[in-house]
Length: 330
Image (cartoon, rainbow, N blue to C red):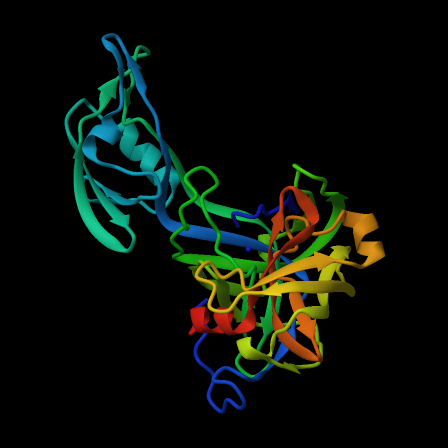
């Protein structure tokens, strides 16, 4: 079993569903609230940051000189496919000081860059890169379509922790998780849910990682009654609730207040919310990492999901509308 947590960087190609009623996206979906284990593969190695190589002649940065940027995804070295960190390490072991050709994806655009390795003081040839080949952690499912098996989670993308860039997604899996501990949030220090999961127990796949959520298909889902989704126009300031899993595998309903609604928010922060539920405040201090994706319910409709916490005040945070998530998934 793995024990890990997903941070708020973190956490599926969902097709447009026919037969919609009301707003363009109104449909009946089962609200989630349960945490799941998420494992995401980038399909290459992602440049987290550029570094300097300490050589006999001083410090140099071969990667920067070649034009590499944080967030680039390296998919081939000298024509040899690179799908993970192990592949890249093998390619680096073969360096002899000659120029290396890298095939790179940047914002879904392919390019080829030539880089001259630098010889470090310890005698190894280096490119001056910190790399990542995927991410894993705990996040919350927002909704599930009982007809198609499609789901949405997190309400924001899975980003590289160092560069902040959205991780490209070639494949991924989702597995049941159990919450084993809570680090409560406080001003200046976001809390987190800590959980355990095993990728061997996968119940679904991740097909897309977008700025407004991750999406895919699940083979099973633990019940729940479908609710109609609300259009952006229906969301209003006032009382609401969220479904969250803060202990074991139990999903519970907690009271919140939607303090402000922002129409057509470009960053997806459609709502400013405040936790008012005394028990949730006592247990978590408010919104904590891992709760991203918790569905927001107002007037009996699924209106969106929790996405971020205000670092200065963990009782407050932001939510994304369900319309925005569904459009991102289409």
